[in-house]
Image 1 (cartoon, rainbow, N blue to C red):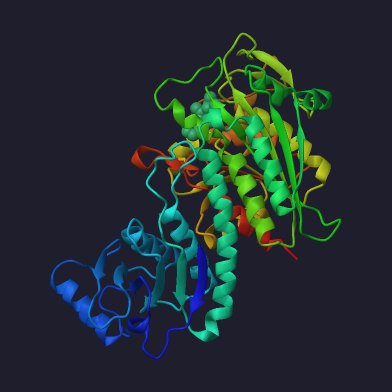
Image 2 (tube, rainbow, N blue to C red; image 1 turned 30 degrees about the horizontal axis):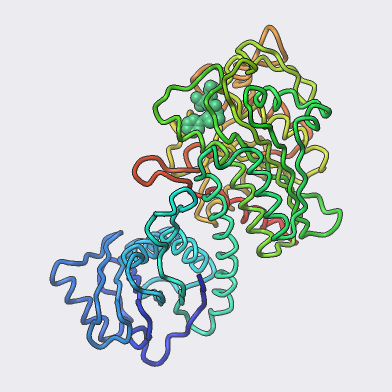
Length: 486
Ligand code: BES
Ligand code: MN
Ligand code: ZN
């Protein structure tokens, strides 16, 4: 997909020759500044009851009089926010994506001038509206024919808007990678497959990639990670991918992604209903690789290390059992009371491993708890950190990227729940506050780190008819890292 800016000529939007002209109308009535031809068309569709100035309202007109474009798509945008812009562009593109239009010009009327934020949102919306998963469904309807997007904006704004388009395309490539990997069924995305993807990514985009296997993990003493991996026929992989875009010696940002390629729950097995969705349990890993893809793609001047502990959580004769005690890489012992609380077990060893990079900050990303979905639903990612400054950075990155998070508490009182008579800690607390106790467990492994945890169980994918990965929180991670670039 090719994205560029285009100056509205003397004839305005109505004179633009394109397969489709997408006009985003800000406000709750016909905005000023619309060309006469377009205003006439708009009045007619409103009059006919085919269009309202309400969020989501769209109408497509073919070969309308007085307009150079072959199609005009009107989209209503009553709210004046970047998120509303993204939704409006998404709705407009969705209205024409399965048709014959190859080129689209997008114009804004009555709203804020297009800037880099809206440019980025435009790229995200277009990609989101046109993505089709095909890997294991080659018969899926052909991907959209749309291949050229022009954003109408004044010459004065073009430079900033172009920057937004470039950044948006790098982020979109990262989001697409994350969606693609997370959508793949577990038999097409094993720990070894993930490692191969990381290596391929490394070759294509200049990342240094190192993959540790079971023997390496044993030598290091990753007892918690290996305990989860031991029930599966699939060998575990511990992936380390580095983007060195910053100065040599600059402390890196470390991103740790939960890479459970399938979570059956292990011996504490999950119920059958919707267990298929546990193929998405490597969404954190996918987002870390996606963020690296995006940052490398834009040659971001920052050092980033991605760490992905990857394995399956399976029941078997060799699987870890409830009550088993293992020794983590940190030396702390863990009583595995519930084998379904496996994410924290692989993450704790990865967090300890992160210490060796002497990071400026560590952010782990994980589809960690069903409790987080109960707490926050599917809109905001759960953010946990004892560090107020880091919290502010991540929240701001989420708002800027239209990929929002919400801070959750980490009071010491919640730590009580992890006490065990047989080890330094148990791996679960009671049901109540489950997302918080999971974070408290991780916190015990971060004494030497500036650390934050993102629980993306509710945001990394959608269930229902539109079942599939969202690519979140790639945009948040990218903006977090970019804000730290030199
Ligand atoms: N991968 C799941 C968390 C999850 C559940 C994500 C549902 C998305 C939707 C995680 O490994 C898990 O099983 N967590 C348990 C923890 C419990 C045993 C303390 C959970 O949330 O039920
Ligand atoms: Mn689990
Ligand atoms: Zn899991």
